[in-house]
Length: 119
View 1 (tube, helix red, strand yellow):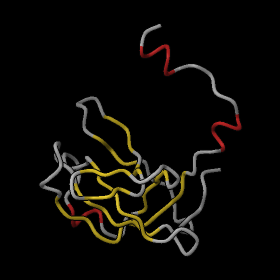
View 2: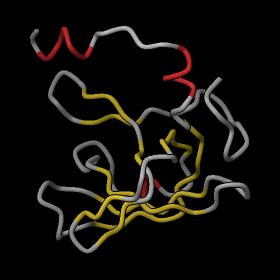
View 3: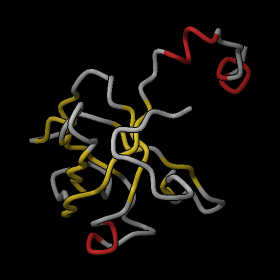
View 4: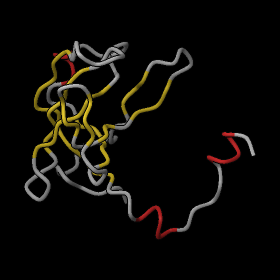
């Protein structure tokens, strides 16, 4: 089975429900020169239940750090922490590759409360 076919294997609702996709607001964004690929270190506020989490995000092609502060993003908050160079990444900020391979953020289409779970 090729990689694409393997990725498209059906999953059950219970599998999907385990993924905690939550809305957060970017509090800070700075360059991450120690990363192997160009990236930013983001601090994202996921609300009072989850709190502030750090993430390494490879979104430098489409975003400048100052344009990220205050934006809402969607992140996976229940992956185990992952060491990326000197950073312990505590969440995964989600996005999609465009036709040129650049990552565009996955964002809500309106103002929603911090920590809101994907419905």
